Image 1: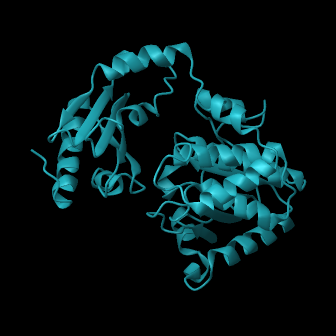
Image 2 (image 1 turned 135 degrees about the vertical axis):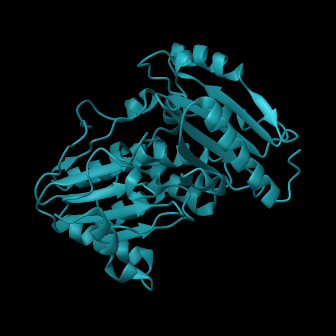
Length: 340
């Protein structure tokens, strides 16, 4: 079985001169012809783009009669997108002769649900600029607002007929990664793709409404987290903390979008949520006005996009907070933003 490093080096001549659409077309040709099992994985702690891309691809491949497994556990507020039994638990090993799709994963270590070793072929589709284009075929386009935009193009290349069931999770992925078209990554292409998905029968009103639903426990936890909000560096940074004690042992907190609440603090260029999980602290960063969340998180051992990125730090919370503050200060000073 090939190792991860072998998979990373097997990308066909890096396809440096090939348009990404040509590589998507080759992926589609090979997927249509594939007779063995297909596995679709995304990143750890899957968000709306990871889940929506995975479900749209899975349903499109299923319409071609393919045997597809999706070992993915979404947050509770996104589970409505999946049909009962459509998602599986983690796989310890891949089925023999598997085609493995890795979606929305910037680096192999962040893939979750199944090992990357052992695939007969690995196809990598992503929009993270830090992606090293691992796999036998890779399409990495950071200009795309969401991986779901690339999945839309891939499904078009498959020649599958669009249905509401395929189009709905695809549009959900785009909506989540663009903040319902409020974020700066929204462009004409994004809106055109969304329009085509609407034409396939998506109920936009119902979808956008459901994407905002949260359990009652969410609001109780949100109140606790908002009580921790602090400002630093002249208000250029706003951050909040979620401890294990606040959450309670084993609770599913659906807190990934808490950082989206504080990011609108007036005058803030950087918003950070520090979320304690066992002996580690997950760091979620959002930025604006040219300040790079990606650089902040790379300094912390993570990665992501310019405006939205994340990292995982060893605990305790106080140590993670100190490292975060130093990384944010360095980025603000790099951008010549007052950090007093």
